[in-house]
Length: 206
Image 1 (cartoon, rainbow, N blue to C red):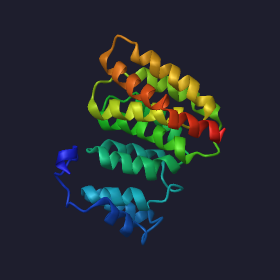
Image 2: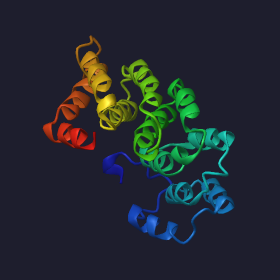
Image 3: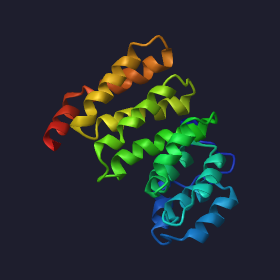
């Protein structure tokens, strides 16, 4: 866990597949999720994000939990499996992207990346303003932020043909910028968005 950058200060070393297996027994347990989160234990917090009921999650709870993020995997698991399913997801993305705390800002872009997959009925127009948020934070050099930024950009570009063009345009713009972090983000995103297999998949999807 430590080798891949996970904070192990309060971790037991339980593999994520085991946590997911346990989560199947306790779906939609809002009160239990709150207790697990309050424990402060690494795996307990991942489990909390897997079993909480997104319909009962408030914006206040989201702000409290995101402030507690101290490891990229807890951040991603909670954003991908819980926060993205709440009606507050996009509003929080706009808020968290402006926050200077590393894992709070990462949460914004992890949520965007997940929203691209989760929000199947969302219109393409809903994602275009998110490109502006990506552009605004593409110069943040912190490891866990910049990785989430290019992840979000790639996911928007892979969502549909209509979103592919503006996403690739932004990726190329960042790659040609004078900022090293923006260049890194743009080059990685552009590489994937111009991959022939990705383009073929999008064209088939229509």
